[in-house]
Image 1 (cartoon, rainbow, N blue to C red):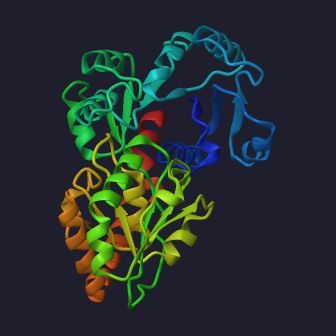
Image 2 (image 1 turned 180 degrees about the vertical axis):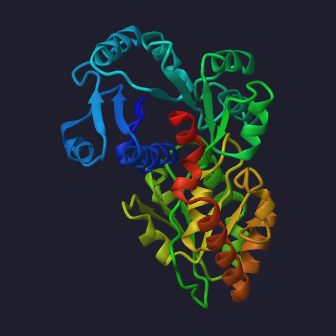
Length: 357
Protein backbone atom coordinates (compact mmCIF):
# COMPACT_ATOMS: atom_id res chain seq x y z
CA UNK A 1 0.00 0.00 0.00
CA UNK A 2 1.06 3.56 -0.65
CA UNK A 3 2.17 5.87 2.15
CA UNK A 4 0.02 8.99 2.56
CA UNK A 5 0.66 11.98 4.79
CA UNK A 6 -2.36 14.15 5.57
CA UNK A 7 -1.62 17.60 7.02
CA UNK A 8 -4.34 19.51 8.88
CA UNK A 9 -4.98 22.05 11.63
CA UNK A 10 -8.62 20.93 12.03
CA UNK A 11 -9.49 19.07 15.25
CA UNK A 12 -11.48 16.58 13.19
CA UNK A 13 -11.91 14.02 15.98
CA UNK A 14 -14.44 16.29 17.72
CA UNK A 15 -16.98 16.01 14.87
CA UNK A 16 -19.90 18.45 15.35
CA UNK A 17 -19.21 20.43 12.16
CA UNK A 18 -19.20 19.63 8.46
CA UNK A 19 -15.49 20.19 7.86
CA UNK A 20 -14.56 17.94 10.80
CA UNK A 21 -16.94 15.20 9.68
CA UNK A 22 -15.53 15.38 6.17
CA UNK A 23 -11.90 15.01 7.28
CA UNK A 24 -12.86 12.20 9.68
CA UNK A 25 -14.51 10.29 6.84
CA UNK A 26 -11.49 10.77 4.59
CA UNK A 27 -9.09 9.59 7.29
CA UNK A 28 -11.22 6.53 8.08
CA UNK A 29 -11.20 5.57 4.40
CA UNK A 30 -7.50 6.21 3.78
CA UNK A 31 -6.56 4.24 6.89
CA UNK A 32 -8.08 1.15 5.23
CA UNK A 33 -6.46 1.54 1.81
CA UNK A 34 -3.05 3.06 2.60
CA UNK A 35 -0.37 3.51 5.24
CA UNK A 36 -1.75 6.79 6.59
CA UNK A 37 -0.04 9.31 8.84
CA UNK A 38 -1.83 12.46 9.97
CA UNK A 39 0.25 15.50 10.95
CA UNK A 40 -1.72 17.85 13.18
CA UNK A 41 -0.87 21.52 13.67
CA UNK A 42 -2.29 22.52 17.02
CA UNK A 43 -2.69 21.56 20.65
CA UNK A 44 -4.68 18.54 21.84
CA UNK A 45 -6.15 18.89 25.36
CA UNK A 46 -5.57 15.94 27.65
CA UNK A 47 -9.32 15.35 27.82
CA UNK A 48 -9.35 14.63 24.07
CA UNK A 49 -6.49 12.11 24.13
CA UNK A 50 -8.83 9.10 24.08
CA UNK A 51 -10.51 10.44 20.94
CA UNK A 52 -7.10 10.68 19.25
CA UNK A 53 -6.14 7.17 20.36
CA UNK A 54 -9.30 5.73 18.78
CA UNK A 55 -8.47 7.05 15.31
CA UNK A 56 -7.37 4.20 13.00
CA UNK A 57 -4.24 5.99 11.76
CA UNK A 58 -0.90 7.21 13.04
CA UNK A 59 -1.51 10.71 14.44
CA UNK A 60 1.53 12.94 14.87
CA UNK A 61 0.96 16.13 16.87
CA UNK A 62 3.75 18.34 15.57
CA UNK A 63 3.97 20.25 18.87
CA UNK A 64 1.60 19.79 21.79
CA UNK A 65 3.18 22.38 24.06
CA UNK A 66 3.23 25.55 21.97
CA UNK A 67 1.40 27.18 19.07
CA UNK A 68 4.16 27.61 16.51
CA UNK A 69 4.78 30.01 13.67
CA UNK A 70 4.31 28.72 10.11
CA UNK A 71 8.06 28.17 9.81
CA UNK A 72 8.07 26.44 13.20
CA UNK A 73 5.44 23.95 12.07
CA UNK A 74 7.30 23.54 8.79
CA UNK A 75 10.48 22.61 10.63
CA UNK A 76 8.54 20.09 12.72
CA UNK A 77 7.12 18.57 9.55
CA UNK A 78 10.61 18.44 8.09
CA UNK A 79 11.78 16.50 11.14
CA UNK A 80 8.94 14.03 10.63
CA UNK A 81 9.82 13.60 6.97
CA UNK A 82 13.46 12.85 7.80
CA UNK A 83 12.26 9.43 8.97
CA UNK A 84 9.19 9.06 6.80
CA UNK A 85 8.91 9.20 3.02
CA UNK A 86 5.28 9.39 1.85
CA UNK A 87 4.17 8.73 -1.71
CA UNK A 88 1.55 11.50 -1.47
CA UNK A 89 0.80 14.48 0.76
CA UNK A 90 -2.76 15.76 1.22
CA UNK A 91 -3.11 19.33 2.50
CA UNK A 92 -6.28 20.38 4.37
CA UNK A 93 -6.91 23.25 3.22
CA UNK A 94 -5.33 25.88 0.95
CA UNK A 95 -4.16 28.12 3.82
CA UNK A 96 -1.68 25.36 4.80
CA UNK A 97 -0.07 25.29 1.37
CA UNK A 98 3.11 26.83 2.82
CA UNK A 99 3.82 23.42 4.36
CA UNK A 100 4.72 22.14 0.91
CA UNK A 101 7.95 24.16 1.16
CA UNK A 102 9.13 21.46 3.54
CA UNK A 103 8.09 18.49 1.37
CA UNK A 104 10.21 16.79 -1.29
CA UNK A 105 9.14 18.00 -4.72
CA UNK A 106 9.01 14.41 -5.97
CA UNK A 107 6.12 13.60 -3.63
CA UNK A 108 2.62 13.77 -5.14
CA UNK A 109 0.97 16.89 -3.74
CA UNK A 110 -2.82 16.96 -3.34
CA UNK A 111 -4.99 19.81 -2.11
CA UNK A 112 -8.34 19.07 -0.47
CA UNK A 113 -10.28 22.28 -1.17
CA UNK A 114 -13.55 21.66 0.66
CA UNK A 115 -14.57 25.21 -0.34
CA UNK A 116 -13.25 27.55 -3.00
CA UNK A 117 -12.15 30.38 -0.71
CA UNK A 118 -12.51 33.14 -3.30
CA UNK A 119 -16.12 32.02 -3.82
CA UNK A 120 -16.70 32.08 -0.07
CA UNK A 121 -15.15 35.55 0.11
CA UNK A 122 -17.53 36.80 -2.59
CA UNK A 123 -20.57 35.26 -0.90
CA UNK A 124 -19.73 36.66 2.54
CA UNK A 125 -19.29 40.12 1.09
CA UNK A 126 -22.65 39.94 -0.67
CA UNK A 127 -24.34 39.38 2.68
CA UNK A 128 -22.33 42.11 4.45
CA UNK A 129 -20.05 39.74 6.34
CA UNK A 130 -16.84 40.97 4.77
CA UNK A 131 -13.79 40.11 6.87
CA UNK A 132 -15.63 37.62 9.09
CA UNK A 133 -13.30 34.85 7.83
CA UNK A 134 -9.92 34.94 6.07
CA UNK A 135 -10.40 36.14 2.50
CA UNK A 136 -8.65 35.36 -0.76
CA UNK A 137 -8.88 36.62 -4.32
CA UNK A 138 -9.47 34.18 -7.17
CA UNK A 139 -6.17 35.27 -8.72
CA UNK A 140 -4.16 34.35 -5.63
CA UNK A 141 -6.10 31.15 -5.03
CA UNK A 142 -5.67 29.88 -8.57
CA UNK A 143 -1.95 30.72 -8.46
CA UNK A 144 -1.50 28.56 -5.35
CA UNK A 145 -3.35 25.69 -7.03
CA UNK A 146 -0.63 25.53 -9.68
CA UNK A 147 1.73 24.07 -7.07
CA UNK A 148 -0.39 20.94 -6.70
CA UNK A 149 -0.58 17.77 -8.76
CA UNK A 150 -4.26 17.28 -7.93
CA UNK A 151 -7.11 19.21 -6.32
CA UNK A 152 -10.02 17.55 -4.52
CA UNK A 153 -13.47 19.14 -4.59
CA UNK A 154 -16.83 18.13 -3.16
CA UNK A 155 -19.29 18.97 -5.91
CA UNK A 156 -19.81 19.26 -9.65
CA UNK A 157 -20.03 23.08 -9.82
CA UNK A 158 -16.65 23.41 -8.10
CA UNK A 159 -15.12 20.78 -10.38
CA UNK A 160 -16.40 22.55 -13.48
CA UNK A 161 -15.07 25.91 -12.32
CA UNK A 162 -11.62 24.64 -11.39
CA UNK A 163 -11.24 22.49 -14.49
CA UNK A 164 -11.17 25.75 -16.45
CA UNK A 165 -8.13 26.98 -14.50
CA UNK A 166 -6.47 23.68 -13.56
CA UNK A 167 -7.36 21.25 -16.37
CA UNK A 168 -6.67 17.60 -15.67
CA UNK A 169 -5.94 18.17 -11.97
CA UNK A 170 -9.40 18.20 -10.41
CA UNK A 171 -10.77 15.18 -8.52
CA UNK A 172 -14.48 15.10 -7.70
CA UNK A 173 -14.63 13.42 -4.28
CA UNK A 174 -18.04 14.05 -2.69
CA UNK A 175 -18.63 13.53 1.00
CA UNK A 176 -19.83 9.98 1.72
CA UNK A 177 -22.86 9.27 3.87
CA UNK A 178 -24.49 6.23 5.43
CA UNK A 179 -28.18 5.79 4.64
CA UNK A 180 -30.35 5.64 7.73
CA UNK A 181 -33.56 3.65 7.49
CA UNK A 182 -36.44 5.43 9.19
CA UNK A 183 -40.21 5.12 9.22
CA UNK A 184 -42.13 8.26 8.31
CA UNK A 185 -44.62 9.17 11.03
CA UNK A 186 -48.19 9.86 9.85
CA UNK A 187 -48.32 13.22 11.63
CA UNK A 188 -45.45 15.70 11.26
CA UNK A 189 -44.82 17.65 14.46
CA UNK A 190 -41.06 18.24 14.71
CA UNK A 191 -39.18 20.46 12.28
CA UNK A 192 -35.46 20.09 12.88
CA UNK A 193 -32.30 22.05 12.14
CA UNK A 194 -28.83 20.78 13.05
CA UNK A 195 -25.66 22.83 12.64
CA UNK A 196 -22.36 24.10 14.01
CA UNK A 197 -21.76 27.71 15.00
CA UNK A 198 -20.42 28.54 11.50
CA UNK A 199 -21.59 32.04 10.52
CA UNK A 200 -23.76 31.04 7.52
CA UNK A 201 -25.57 28.56 9.79
CA UNK A 202 -26.29 31.22 12.41
CA UNK A 203 -27.52 33.59 9.73
CA UNK A 204 -29.67 30.85 8.18
CA UNK A 205 -31.65 29.82 11.23
CA UNK A 206 -31.91 33.36 12.64
CA UNK A 207 -33.37 34.55 9.32
CA UNK A 208 -35.69 31.53 9.22
CA UNK A 209 -36.96 32.10 12.77
CA UNK A 210 -37.57 35.80 12.19
CA UNK A 211 -39.12 35.62 8.74
CA UNK A 212 -40.57 32.14 8.09
CA UNK A 213 -41.37 30.70 11.50
CA UNK A 214 -44.21 33.10 12.43
CA UNK A 215 -46.32 31.99 9.45
CA UNK A 216 -45.45 28.30 9.93
CA UNK A 217 -46.22 28.22 13.65
CA UNK A 218 -49.43 30.23 13.21
CA UNK A 219 -50.87 27.73 10.75
CA UNK A 220 -49.49 24.41 12.00
CA UNK A 221 -49.12 22.69 15.36
CA UNK A 222 -45.38 22.12 15.09
CA UNK A 223 -42.13 22.79 16.97
CA UNK A 224 -38.71 23.83 15.66
CA UNK A 225 -35.94 21.81 17.32
CA UNK A 226 -32.39 23.13 16.93
CA UNK A 227 -29.45 20.80 17.55
CA UNK A 228 -25.69 21.24 17.55
CA UNK A 229 -23.16 23.73 18.84
CA UNK A 230 -25.11 26.49 17.12
CA UNK A 231 -27.37 26.42 20.20
CA UNK A 232 -24.60 28.19 22.11
CA UNK A 233 -25.15 31.31 20.00
CA UNK A 234 -28.79 31.82 21.07
CA UNK A 235 -30.50 32.78 24.33
CA UNK A 236 -33.60 30.61 24.96
CA UNK A 237 -35.53 33.51 26.49
CA UNK A 238 -35.20 35.51 23.29
CA UNK A 239 -36.66 32.81 21.04
CA UNK A 240 -40.34 32.72 20.02
CA UNK A 241 -42.72 30.02 21.25
CA UNK A 242 -42.19 26.61 19.73
CA UNK A 243 -38.45 27.07 19.07
CA UNK A 244 -36.46 24.70 21.28
CA UNK A 245 -32.68 24.54 21.71
CA UNK A 246 -31.61 20.92 22.14
CA UNK A 247 -27.80 21.26 22.18
CA UNK A 248 -25.17 18.89 20.82
CA UNK A 249 -25.79 15.16 20.43
CA UNK A 250 -23.00 12.75 19.57
CA UNK A 251 -25.31 10.33 17.73
CA UNK A 252 -26.98 12.24 14.89
CA UNK A 253 -29.25 9.28 14.15
CA UNK A 254 -31.02 10.01 17.44
CA UNK A 255 -31.82 13.45 16.04
CA UNK A 256 -33.10 12.08 12.75
CA UNK A 257 -35.19 9.43 14.49
CA UNK A 258 -37.33 12.06 16.21
CA UNK A 259 -37.40 14.56 13.31
CA UNK A 260 -40.32 14.75 10.88
CA UNK A 261 -38.98 17.46 8.56
CA UNK A 262 -35.42 18.76 8.21
CA UNK A 263 -34.65 22.32 7.11
CA UNK A 264 -31.44 23.87 5.84
CA UNK A 265 -32.26 27.53 5.13
CA UNK A 266 -28.63 28.51 4.40
CA UNK A 267 -28.39 31.66 2.25
CA UNK A 268 -24.68 31.91 1.45
CA UNK A 269 -21.30 30.21 1.75
CA UNK A 270 -19.41 27.93 -0.62
CA UNK A 271 -19.04 24.30 -1.62
CA UNK A 272 -21.45 21.45 -1.02
CA UNK A 273 -23.46 21.38 2.19
CA UNK A 274 -22.64 18.28 4.22
CA UNK A 275 -25.72 18.78 6.40
CA UNK A 276 -27.81 18.55 3.20
CA UNK A 277 -26.17 15.24 2.27
CA UNK A 278 -26.67 13.87 5.77
CA UNK A 279 -30.32 14.94 5.80
CA UNK A 280 -30.98 13.22 2.48
CA UNK A 281 -29.42 10.02 3.79
CA UNK A 282 -31.38 10.25 7.03
CA UNK A 283 -34.79 9.31 5.70
CA UNK A 284 -36.28 12.64 6.83
CA UNK A 285 -37.82 14.88 4.14
CA UNK A 286 -35.79 18.06 3.60
CA UNK A 287 -36.58 21.64 2.63
CA UNK A 288 -33.54 23.70 1.67
CA UNK A 289 -32.51 26.67 -0.42
CA UNK A 290 -31.02 26.61 -3.90
CA UNK A 291 -27.70 27.38 -2.24
CA UNK A 292 -28.21 24.56 0.26
CA UNK A 293 -28.80 22.18 -2.65
CA UNK A 294 -25.63 23.22 -4.49
CA UNK A 295 -24.38 20.29 -6.56
CA UNK A 296 -27.69 18.46 -6.15
CA UNK A 297 -30.25 20.78 -7.74
CA UNK A 298 -31.24 18.14 -10.30
CA UNK A 299 -32.82 16.23 -7.39
CA UNK A 300 -35.16 19.07 -6.41
CA UNK A 301 -38.77 17.86 -6.26
CA UNK A 302 -37.60 14.26 -6.19
CA UNK A 303 -35.37 13.96 -3.11
CA UNK A 304 -36.11 17.29 -1.40
CA UNK A 305 -37.99 20.56 -1.83
CA UNK A 306 -36.51 23.97 -2.63
CA UNK A 307 -37.49 27.22 -0.89
CA UNK A 308 -35.64 30.49 -1.42
CA UNK A 309 -37.65 32.86 0.73
CA UNK A 310 -39.78 32.94 3.89
CA UNK A 311 -43.05 32.53 1.99
CA UNK A 312 -41.68 29.59 0.01
CA UNK A 313 -40.42 27.92 3.20
CA UNK A 314 -43.84 28.28 4.82
CA UNK A 315 -45.54 26.89 1.71
CA UNK A 316 -43.19 23.93 1.22
CA UNK A 317 -43.20 22.94 4.89
CA UNK A 318 -46.99 23.22 4.90
CA UNK A 319 -47.14 20.97 1.85
CA UNK A 320 -45.05 18.34 3.64
CA UNK A 321 -47.07 18.55 6.85
CA UNK A 322 -50.31 17.95 4.95
CA UNK A 323 -49.04 15.25 2.60
CA UNK A 324 -47.76 12.00 4.12
CA UNK A 325 -47.26 10.31 0.75
CA UNK A 326 -45.07 13.20 -0.44
CA UNK A 327 -42.89 12.89 2.65
CA UNK A 328 -42.57 9.16 2.06
CA UNK A 329 -41.77 9.59 -1.64
CA UNK A 330 -39.06 12.19 -1.01
CA UNK A 331 -37.48 10.08 1.70
CA UNK A 332 -37.49 6.93 -0.40
CA UNK A 333 -35.98 8.64 -3.44
CA UNK A 334 -33.34 10.43 -1.36
CA UNK A 335 -32.21 7.28 0.45
CA UNK A 336 -31.99 5.31 -2.78
CA UNK A 337 -30.05 8.03 -4.57
CA UNK A 338 -27.60 8.53 -1.71
CA UNK A 339 -26.93 4.79 -1.38
CA UNK A 340 -26.21 4.58 -5.11
CA UNK A 341 -24.03 7.70 -5.48
CA UNK A 342 -22.48 8.57 -2.11
CA UNK A 343 -21.01 5.31 -0.84
CA UNK A 344 -17.56 5.81 0.71
CA UNK A 345 -15.36 3.89 -1.73
CA UNK A 346 -17.18 5.41 -4.68
CA UNK A 347 -16.68 8.96 -3.38
CA UNK A 348 -12.96 8.57 -2.73
CA UNK A 349 -12.01 6.29 -5.64
CA UNK A 350 -10.69 9.17 -7.80
CA UNK A 351 -8.25 10.07 -5.00
CA UNK A 352 -7.10 6.49 -4.55
CA UNK A 353 -6.57 6.17 -8.29
CA UNK A 354 -4.15 9.12 -8.47
CA UNK A 355 -2.32 8.04 -5.31
CA UNK A 356 -1.78 4.56 -6.74
CA UNK A 357 -0.88 5.74 -10.25
